[in-house]
Each structure stands twice: as structure tokens, then as C-alpha cells.
Length: 150
Image 1 (cartoon, helix red, strand yellow):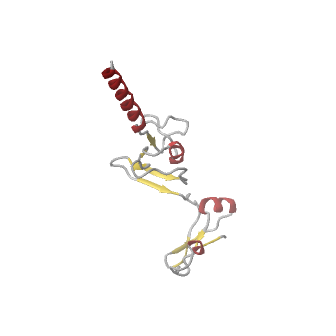
Image 2: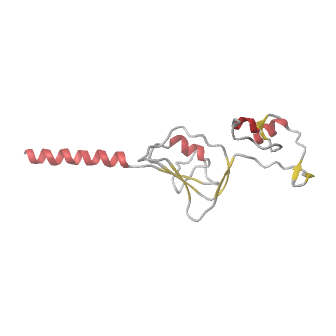
Image 3: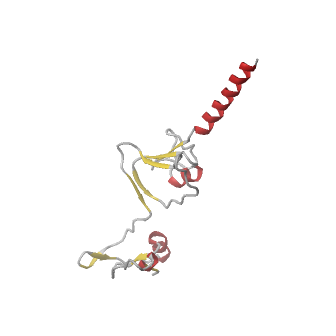
């Protein structure tokens, strides 16, 4: 009788460990939909949707394409259970927080181009801040000094 209890207890321990060790896998694709389940067959559209669900040990597989998205991590992994974002094998993933500006561009000088944007709100949401390249940034300056609002 004592031996049966021992094996039963050991079995329960292994089941609990197996359940805790199971890490989720999420999939994202440019043709996905955030109302999907995030499975390989029904991927999410945004990396953020997967990020919102991920816990330590989980992996997000990202199919090839350009993702014009901003991703904000809500939690961290651990040393033994990192949160992983992986490009699908053999595919190229580009994460860009910008939107293209479709306008007539002209050469300003050298390799600098300029355009006129009439929709100021669109400029703010597409570019956020304007990076200053008119002077080098000193190592002692805060990173914010590179940016200015237009």
C-alpha cells in the first residue's frame, strides 16, 4: 500500500512539472488576423497581439514580411525561460516602426531629400520625432538630445 502511494505521488509531481514546462508557441504573419488563435494555421497579424499573451518560456514565430508596427513588451522572461521572437526559418522579417510617405521627393543637397507633407497629424504619427543629423551627438549627452519635435 505504501508503495502505491509513493508511485501515485511521484506521478502527480511529474504531471505538474510537465504542465508547468509546457511553453506556448504563437505565430504571426502579414496575412494573419488578430482575431485568429495565433496558431501556425491561423496566425495573428500583429506581433503585439502575440506579445500581450506571451509568458516566460513562450516563443513567437514570425513569418517573412515587413511589419510596420510598434511592439511594447509587457513582461520579461527569466534566465531559464526566455520569451523568444524568431523569424520563420528561411524567411526574412523586417520590423519597422515607420510608415511610407507617398509624396513627391526632391533633392535638397547631396544625398538629402525633402518633401512637403500637408497632413501634419500624419507626419506626427508616421515619424514621431525628427532625428537631428545636423551635428554629432556627444557621448555625454542624453539620447533625447538627438530628437526634436517639429
